[in-house]
Length: 385
Image 1 (cartoon, rainbow, N blue to C red):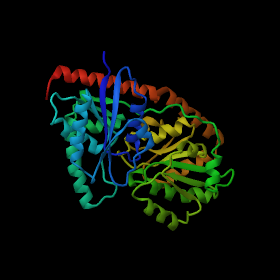
Image 2: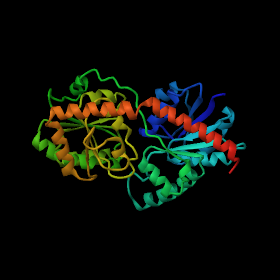
Image 3: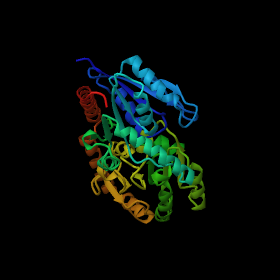
Image 4: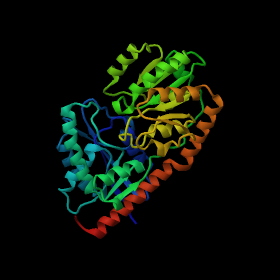
Protein backbone atom coordinates (compact mmCIF):
# COMPACT_ATOMS: atom_id res chain seq x y z
CA UNK A 1 0.00 0.00 0.00
CA UNK A 2 1.38 3.41 -0.98
CA UNK A 3 2.13 5.89 1.83
CA UNK A 4 -0.51 8.52 2.53
CA UNK A 5 0.43 11.97 1.25
CA UNK A 6 -0.22 14.33 4.18
CA UNK A 7 -0.10 18.13 4.00
CA UNK A 8 0.50 19.64 7.44
CA UNK A 9 -0.96 23.15 7.63
CA UNK A 10 0.34 25.54 10.27
CA UNK A 11 -0.73 29.18 10.23
CA UNK A 12 2.62 30.31 11.64
CA UNK A 13 5.56 28.97 13.60
CA UNK A 14 5.04 31.02 16.73
CA UNK A 15 6.23 29.27 19.89
CA UNK A 16 3.72 26.82 21.32
CA UNK A 17 2.64 23.23 21.61
CA UNK A 18 1.11 23.13 18.14
CA UNK A 19 4.45 24.03 16.57
CA UNK A 20 6.26 21.35 18.57
CA UNK A 21 3.60 18.76 17.76
CA UNK A 22 3.68 19.54 14.03
CA UNK A 23 7.46 19.38 13.74
CA UNK A 24 7.48 16.07 15.62
CA UNK A 25 4.95 14.56 13.21
CA UNK A 26 6.94 15.64 10.16
CA UNK A 27 10.38 14.75 11.51
CA UNK A 28 9.42 11.36 12.94
CA UNK A 29 6.88 10.22 10.35
CA UNK A 30 7.02 6.57 9.37
CA UNK A 31 7.85 7.11 5.68
CA UNK A 32 6.49 3.67 4.81
CA UNK A 33 3.05 4.93 5.93
CA UNK A 34 3.13 8.71 5.48
CA UNK A 35 4.79 11.17 3.09
CA UNK A 36 4.52 14.53 4.90
CA UNK A 37 4.84 18.08 3.61
CA UNK A 38 4.80 21.08 5.97
CA UNK A 39 3.08 24.27 4.78
CA UNK A 40 3.64 27.30 7.04
CA UNK A 41 2.33 30.81 6.93
CA UNK A 42 4.93 33.46 7.59
CA UNK A 43 3.51 36.64 9.06
CA UNK A 44 5.38 39.77 10.17
CA UNK A 45 7.22 39.32 13.46
CA UNK A 46 7.31 35.51 13.31
CA UNK A 47 10.63 34.25 12.04
CA UNK A 48 11.08 31.20 9.86
CA UNK A 49 13.22 28.60 11.57
CA UNK A 50 16.14 26.49 10.43
CA UNK A 51 14.37 23.53 12.02
CA UNK A 52 11.39 23.86 9.68
CA UNK A 53 13.61 24.63 6.71
CA UNK A 54 15.54 21.42 7.34
CA UNK A 55 12.25 19.52 7.10
CA UNK A 56 11.51 21.02 3.68
CA UNK A 57 8.82 23.45 4.82
CA UNK A 58 6.99 25.49 2.20
CA UNK A 59 6.47 29.12 3.31
CA UNK A 60 3.48 31.30 2.44
CA UNK A 61 3.92 35.04 3.12
CA UNK A 62 1.03 36.51 5.12
CA UNK A 63 0.26 40.20 4.93
CA UNK A 64 -1.99 40.38 7.98
CA UNK A 65 -3.45 38.50 10.94
CA UNK A 66 -5.94 36.80 8.61
CA UNK A 67 -4.97 36.50 4.95
CA UNK A 68 -7.48 34.81 2.66
CA UNK A 69 -4.69 34.04 0.23
CA UNK A 70 -3.46 31.39 2.64
CA UNK A 71 -6.42 29.09 1.94
CA UNK A 72 -5.75 29.42 -1.81
CA UNK A 73 -2.13 28.42 -1.17
CA UNK A 74 -3.29 25.41 0.86
CA UNK A 75 -5.52 24.26 -2.01
CA UNK A 76 -2.78 24.79 -4.58
CA UNK A 77 -0.12 22.83 -2.73
CA UNK A 78 -2.57 20.07 -1.82
CA UNK A 79 -3.38 19.62 -5.51
CA UNK A 80 0.27 19.69 -6.53
CA UNK A 81 1.22 16.94 -4.10
CA UNK A 82 -2.07 15.08 -4.70
CA UNK A 83 -2.66 15.05 -0.95
CA UNK A 84 -4.70 12.25 0.59
CA UNK A 85 -5.14 14.19 3.81
CA UNK A 86 -4.77 17.73 5.15
CA UNK A 87 -3.87 18.11 8.82
CA UNK A 88 -4.34 21.57 10.37
CA UNK A 89 -2.71 22.39 13.69
CA UNK A 90 -3.97 25.75 14.89
CA UNK A 91 -6.89 28.15 14.94
CA UNK A 92 -6.58 29.94 11.59
CA UNK A 93 -5.22 26.79 10.00
CA UNK A 94 -8.52 24.94 10.63
CA UNK A 95 -10.45 27.72 8.90
CA UNK A 96 -7.99 27.91 6.01
CA UNK A 97 -8.22 24.17 5.35
CA UNK A 98 -12.03 24.19 5.46
CA UNK A 99 -12.06 27.02 2.91
CA UNK A 100 -9.44 25.30 0.74
CA UNK A 101 -11.47 22.11 0.57
CA UNK A 102 -14.35 23.99 -1.02
CA UNK A 103 -12.08 24.45 -4.05
CA UNK A 104 -11.07 20.79 -4.32
CA UNK A 105 -12.60 17.81 -6.11
CA UNK A 106 -11.97 15.06 -5.23
CA UNK A 107 -11.78 16.23 -1.64
CA UNK A 108 -8.91 14.94 0.55
CA UNK A 109 -9.59 13.89 4.11
CA UNK A 110 -9.39 16.63 6.75
CA UNK A 111 -7.91 16.14 10.22
CA UNK A 112 -7.50 18.92 12.79
CA UNK A 113 -5.69 19.02 16.12
CA UNK A 114 -7.23 21.11 18.90
CA UNK A 115 -5.15 22.06 21.92
CA UNK A 116 -7.61 24.07 23.98
CA UNK A 117 -10.15 26.86 23.98
CA UNK A 118 -9.48 29.91 21.83
CA UNK A 119 -9.36 33.27 23.63
CA UNK A 120 -7.60 36.56 22.86
CA UNK A 121 -4.37 37.34 24.70
CA UNK A 122 -5.84 40.63 25.92
CA UNK A 123 -9.50 40.86 26.82
CA UNK A 124 -10.95 44.02 25.27
CA UNK A 125 -14.50 44.45 23.89
CA UNK A 126 -13.16 44.51 20.34
CA UNK A 127 -10.91 41.47 20.85
CA UNK A 128 -13.68 39.47 22.50
CA UNK A 129 -16.11 40.30 19.67
CA UNK A 130 -13.53 39.38 17.05
CA UNK A 131 -12.68 36.09 18.76
CA UNK A 132 -16.37 35.27 19.10
CA UNK A 133 -16.61 35.37 15.31
CA UNK A 134 -13.31 33.50 14.92
CA UNK A 135 -14.48 30.76 17.29
CA UNK A 136 -17.74 30.33 15.40
CA UNK A 137 -15.83 29.99 12.11
CA UNK A 138 -13.31 27.64 13.69
CA UNK A 139 -15.87 25.28 15.24
CA UNK A 140 -17.85 25.31 12.00
CA UNK A 141 -14.67 24.15 10.24
CA UNK A 142 -14.04 21.46 12.87
CA UNK A 143 -17.58 20.12 12.44
CA UNK A 144 -16.73 19.48 8.77
CA UNK A 145 -13.53 17.58 9.55
CA UNK A 146 -13.29 13.83 9.03
CA UNK A 147 -11.39 13.58 12.28
CA UNK A 148 -10.48 15.88 15.16
CA UNK A 149 -7.58 15.13 17.49
CA UNK A 150 -8.11 16.33 21.05
CA UNK A 151 -4.90 16.58 23.05
CA UNK A 152 -6.73 15.66 26.27
CA UNK A 153 -10.09 14.40 27.51
CA UNK A 154 -10.84 17.94 28.69
CA UNK A 155 -10.48 19.19 25.11
CA UNK A 156 -12.55 16.28 23.79
CA UNK A 157 -15.37 17.35 26.10
CA UNK A 158 -15.14 20.91 24.81
CA UNK A 159 -15.36 19.68 21.21
CA UNK A 160 -18.46 17.61 21.94
CA UNK A 161 -20.11 20.65 23.53
CA UNK A 162 -19.32 22.63 20.37
CA UNK A 163 -21.10 20.15 18.14
CA UNK A 164 -18.29 17.99 16.79
CA UNK A 165 -19.59 14.47 16.17
CA UNK A 166 -18.18 12.31 19.02
CA UNK A 167 -17.28 9.42 16.71
CA UNK A 168 -14.90 11.71 14.81
CA UNK A 169 -12.98 12.79 17.93
CA UNK A 170 -9.84 10.91 18.91
CA UNK A 171 -7.96 11.80 22.11
CA UNK A 172 -4.23 11.59 21.40
CA UNK A 173 -1.96 13.25 23.97
CA UNK A 174 1.31 14.80 22.93
CA UNK A 175 4.53 12.86 23.32
CA UNK A 176 8.18 13.70 23.78
CA UNK A 177 11.34 11.80 23.06
CA UNK A 178 13.95 10.72 25.56
CA UNK A 179 15.75 13.79 26.87
CA UNK A 180 19.40 13.64 27.83
CA UNK A 181 19.67 14.44 31.52
CA UNK A 182 23.45 14.74 31.74
CA UNK A 183 24.80 18.07 32.93
CA UNK A 184 24.05 20.30 35.86
CA UNK A 185 22.84 23.50 34.22
CA UNK A 186 25.94 25.35 35.36
CA UNK A 187 26.20 27.24 32.06
CA UNK A 188 22.75 28.75 32.56
CA UNK A 189 23.46 29.55 36.21
CA UNK A 190 26.69 31.28 35.22
CA UNK A 191 25.09 33.19 32.33
CA UNK A 192 22.42 34.65 34.62
CA UNK A 193 24.64 35.12 37.69
CA UNK A 194 22.72 32.63 39.81
CA UNK A 195 24.69 31.84 42.99
CA UNK A 196 25.84 28.22 43.43
CA UNK A 197 23.30 26.28 45.44
CA UNK A 198 20.52 28.86 45.01
CA UNK A 199 17.08 27.25 44.48
CA UNK A 200 15.85 27.73 40.92
CA UNK A 201 12.20 27.67 39.81
CA UNK A 202 11.66 27.54 36.05
CA UNK A 203 8.65 27.95 33.81
CA UNK A 204 8.69 27.58 30.03
CA UNK A 205 5.64 29.14 28.44
CA UNK A 206 4.48 31.93 26.18
CA UNK A 207 4.05 35.16 28.13
CA UNK A 208 0.28 35.20 27.78
CA UNK A 209 -2.29 36.02 30.51
CA UNK A 210 -3.76 32.51 30.50
CA UNK A 211 -0.40 30.98 31.45
CA UNK A 212 -0.66 32.54 34.92
CA UNK A 213 2.75 34.25 35.14
CA UNK A 214 1.19 37.09 37.11
CA UNK A 215 0.04 34.61 39.75
CA UNK A 216 3.53 33.10 39.81
CA UNK A 217 5.08 36.50 40.51
CA UNK A 218 2.67 37.03 43.41
CA UNK A 219 3.66 33.61 44.74
CA UNK A 220 7.34 34.43 44.25
CA UNK A 221 7.09 37.16 46.90
CA UNK A 222 6.28 34.52 49.55
CA UNK A 223 8.89 32.08 48.27
CA UNK A 224 11.65 34.70 48.30
CA UNK A 225 10.61 35.84 51.76
CA UNK A 226 11.23 32.28 53.03
CA UNK A 227 14.20 31.46 50.75
CA UNK A 228 15.81 34.77 49.74
CA UNK A 229 18.31 33.25 47.28
CA UNK A 230 15.60 31.64 45.13
CA UNK A 231 15.63 32.59 41.44
CA UNK A 232 12.66 32.36 39.08
CA UNK A 233 13.58 31.69 35.45
CA UNK A 234 10.83 32.71 33.02
CA UNK A 235 11.63 31.23 29.61
CA UNK A 236 9.53 32.50 26.72
CA UNK A 237 8.26 35.66 25.09
CA UNK A 238 4.84 37.07 24.44
CA UNK A 239 2.44 40.00 24.50
CA UNK A 240 2.53 40.72 28.24
CA UNK A 241 6.28 40.72 28.85
CA UNK A 242 6.36 44.46 29.61
CA UNK A 243 3.46 44.08 32.05
CA UNK A 244 5.19 41.23 33.86
CA UNK A 245 8.47 43.11 34.10
CA UNK A 246 6.61 46.06 35.62
CA UNK A 247 4.86 43.75 38.09
CA UNK A 248 8.18 42.20 39.11
CA UNK A 249 9.63 45.69 39.74
CA UNK A 250 6.58 46.74 41.76
CA UNK A 251 6.91 43.61 43.89
CA UNK A 252 10.60 44.18 44.51
CA UNK A 253 11.59 41.04 42.60
CA UNK A 254 14.14 42.52 40.18
CA UNK A 255 16.94 40.40 41.64
CA UNK A 256 14.87 37.23 41.96
CA UNK A 257 13.02 37.04 38.62
CA UNK A 258 14.94 36.49 35.38
CA UNK A 259 13.24 37.01 32.02
CA UNK A 260 15.26 34.70 29.78
CA UNK A 261 13.29 35.36 26.59
CA UNK A 262 12.81 32.91 23.73
CA UNK A 263 15.38 30.14 23.90
CA UNK A 264 16.47 27.27 21.70
CA UNK A 265 18.31 25.56 24.55
CA UNK A 266 15.39 24.75 26.87
CA UNK A 267 16.96 21.50 28.15
CA UNK A 268 19.83 23.53 29.64
CA UNK A 269 17.35 25.64 31.60
CA UNK A 270 15.56 22.55 32.87
CA UNK A 271 18.86 21.08 34.07
CA UNK A 272 19.57 24.28 35.96
CA UNK A 273 16.28 24.12 37.88
CA UNK A 274 14.99 22.42 40.99
CA UNK A 275 11.28 22.59 40.20
CA UNK A 276 9.12 23.34 37.15
CA UNK A 277 5.99 25.46 37.52
CA UNK A 278 3.04 25.90 35.13
CA UNK A 279 0.33 28.05 36.78
CA UNK A 280 -2.16 28.16 33.86
CA UNK A 281 -5.51 29.71 34.68
CA UNK A 282 -8.25 27.90 32.76
CA UNK A 283 -9.37 25.44 30.10
CA UNK A 284 -7.34 27.18 27.40
CA UNK A 285 -4.47 25.01 28.70
CA UNK A 286 -5.53 21.90 26.86
CA UNK A 287 -2.42 19.93 27.68
CA UNK A 288 0.87 21.71 28.42
CA UNK A 289 3.60 20.00 26.37
CA UNK A 290 6.24 21.85 28.42
CA UNK A 291 5.16 19.68 31.35
CA UNK A 292 6.25 16.56 29.48
CA UNK A 293 9.61 18.09 28.64
CA UNK A 294 10.18 18.98 32.29
CA UNK A 295 9.08 15.53 33.47
CA UNK A 296 11.32 13.85 30.90
CA UNK A 297 14.18 15.86 32.40
CA UNK A 298 13.40 14.53 35.86
CA UNK A 299 12.01 17.76 37.32
CA UNK A 300 9.21 17.73 39.90
CA UNK A 301 6.14 19.72 38.85
CA UNK A 302 3.96 22.32 40.53
CA UNK A 303 1.02 23.20 38.31
CA UNK A 304 -2.55 24.42 38.46
CA UNK A 305 -5.51 22.11 38.30
CA UNK A 306 -6.70 23.62 35.00
CA UNK A 307 -7.71 22.29 31.59
CA UNK A 308 -5.91 19.09 30.66
CA UNK A 309 -3.06 19.46 33.18
CA UNK A 310 -4.44 16.86 35.65
CA UNK A 311 -4.34 14.29 32.83
CA UNK A 312 -0.61 14.91 32.43
CA UNK A 313 0.48 15.34 36.05
CA UNK A 314 -1.26 13.06 38.57
CA UNK A 315 -1.48 15.04 41.81
CA UNK A 316 1.00 13.71 44.34
CA UNK A 317 2.74 11.43 41.84
CA UNK A 318 4.92 13.44 39.47
CA UNK A 319 4.10 16.71 41.15
CA UNK A 320 1.63 18.82 43.07
CA UNK A 321 -1.49 20.47 41.67
CA UNK A 322 -2.99 23.64 43.15
CA UNK A 323 -6.14 25.66 42.44
CA UNK A 324 -5.68 28.02 39.46
CA UNK A 325 -5.23 31.68 40.32
CA UNK A 326 -4.19 30.97 43.94
CA UNK A 327 -0.73 32.43 44.68
CA UNK A 328 -0.79 31.33 48.34
CA UNK A 329 -1.29 27.65 47.45
CA UNK A 330 1.24 27.96 44.63
CA UNK A 331 3.90 29.41 46.96
CA UNK A 332 3.25 26.76 49.60
CA UNK A 333 3.64 23.93 47.07
CA UNK A 334 6.88 25.39 45.69
CA UNK A 335 8.34 25.83 49.16
CA UNK A 336 7.36 22.30 50.17
CA UNK A 337 9.24 20.79 47.24
CA UNK A 338 12.25 23.11 47.51
CA UNK A 339 12.56 22.22 51.17
CA UNK A 340 12.57 18.46 50.68
CA UNK A 341 15.36 17.12 48.40
CA UNK A 342 14.19 13.51 48.78
CA UNK A 343 10.68 14.47 47.67
CA UNK A 344 12.12 16.37 44.70
CA UNK A 345 14.03 13.31 43.55
CA UNK A 346 11.08 10.95 44.03
CA UNK A 347 8.66 13.17 42.12
CA UNK A 348 11.19 13.71 39.33
CA UNK A 349 11.85 10.00 38.93
CA UNK A 350 8.12 9.23 38.86
CA UNK A 351 7.56 11.93 36.23
CA UNK A 352 10.28 10.49 34.01
CA UNK A 353 8.76 7.00 34.28
CA UNK A 354 5.33 8.41 33.46
CA UNK A 355 6.59 10.07 30.28
CA UNK A 356 8.38 6.92 29.15
CA UNK A 357 5.31 4.77 29.79
CA UNK A 358 2.40 6.98 28.68
CA UNK A 359 3.71 9.92 26.68
CA UNK A 360 6.42 8.58 24.41
CA UNK A 361 7.02 10.31 21.11
CA UNK A 362 6.78 7.02 19.23
CA UNK A 363 3.32 6.27 20.60
CA UNK A 364 2.12 9.79 19.74
CA UNK A 365 3.27 9.56 16.12
CA UNK A 366 1.98 5.99 15.67
CA UNK A 367 -1.48 6.77 17.05
CA UNK A 368 -1.76 9.88 14.88
CA UNK A 369 -0.80 8.01 11.72
CA UNK A 370 -3.28 5.26 12.54
CA UNK A 371 -5.97 7.94 12.83
CA UNK A 372 -4.98 9.28 9.41
CA UNK A 373 -5.64 5.87 7.89
CA UNK A 374 -9.03 5.65 9.61
CA UNK A 375 -10.06 9.09 8.37
CA UNK A 376 -8.95 8.46 4.79
CA UNK A 377 -10.89 5.21 4.81
CA UNK A 378 -13.95 6.96 6.23
CA UNK A 379 -13.80 9.63 3.52
CA UNK A 380 -13.37 6.99 0.82
CA UNK A 381 -16.33 4.97 2.00
CA UNK A 382 -18.57 7.93 2.88
CA UNK A 383 -18.24 9.97 -0.28
CA UNK A 384 -18.49 13.75 -0.44
CA UNK A 385 -20.26 15.67 2.27
